[in-house]
Image 1 (cartoon, rainbow, N blue to C red):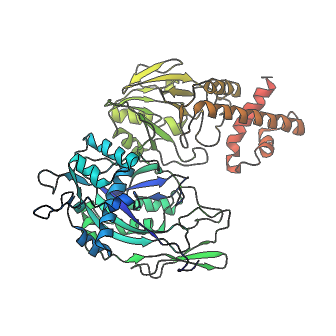
Image 2 (cartoon, rainbow, N blue to C red; image 1 turned 90 degrees about the vertical axis):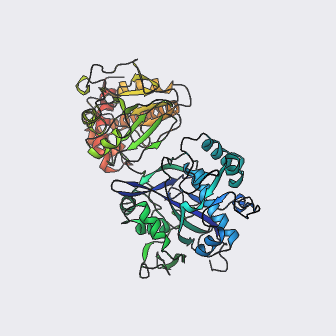
Length: 559
């Protein structure tokens, strides 16, 4: 595609939202859902293209004094000079930056119109925040009107311009994006309550780059370059000061083909003049829908969830992912934190391995009412006693050896704490002590049901007959219960997933029967695995042997 044939890029705004921590600033990132047409599964800053409403005329209402009544801070003329565009476009870009940040993560860069504006931002507990956000998302009213109705003004002084990136001409969807920086207003909280992202959270720029270089998250060039430029700055205030000294120069990445590879360069970007990134040229099968070409020959790497960042999944359940990925733990262990709407305390499900940083992060969400364990495996339970030392919360489990306090757990128990009631379901099979916890809208499954793939029967402690009975029980649960698993992403319907697991187990049993017919009744578990699990990564074969041993025992007992 030539420059003349390339689509005209759509103006867009993106905000690098920053907060200070004891170890330096962190930036808010969101992973775009897989259904997005542009850059699916990629971690980005909040932002998006300009809407018609961003060009609203309602920002300035000159009275006798000619003052701007809904706009506080540098005027459009100042922004036009910094952004290199017309005043009308500059005003729309700033409006889009504030609107997108509010829509996508709930942070509003605005303040009350009455009284001094400088230093005054919207109170975080103000009920009008939710109303204003809903009006933007549902009614698509202009931001200027929404703020005016609430008595607020846009705080352009809270933003700084940072960069301008234009999508390469080879892409069918192109954006001309201005990047802004802003510090998180004191008391406000960034959330992940947007349909455009499935994961959200805070990361230090250096940590995000580390995860990207390890292939655990996907970033586009503008994101990782901007993160590199943020890395090393000591505070959000330092970032804002650095922004004041920057010259905004448009950057359009260039792509050229060299044999069966593509080469990415960043012409005109200071410090990257000699930079080249080489990747295999994508095939029709591997080409992503849009967003700058795959990182590996067989398609884009699967984007990895952000570790050690609390993410809300349901109104009462949030997850904190341990950084312990492996073939057995998938992305890592999910530690679930449960809290009712008006509750001050939290219930912790499966604190995970003995990882001091992770356990401290859990404790920071406290106070902790109870620590519950789905089963005894170390990747779920090893850190429980240490967390109890930190928080003084009791540990409850089916296995008495894991209990700290006066009460264990048993089938039919109801755990009433943190404004919630959890019903305990004994679901043996993966292990003899496996439990699930039933909420009104979700089922916490530990390793009984995983978010991806199927679970191992940890023979001889785990038994297939018991596991099938547990799955049949879960299959009878009412529809619409979310699955909150011990590993992998959440799923939509517990009963449906249990029925799929049952069908899979029956299929595997048939395959094991056929293998015993071919190999003889004395065939070893490894011989059966090599035949039945030929489609599975060999690194998982030792675990598959456990399941095969359980299946052979089940068949020999005539179940």
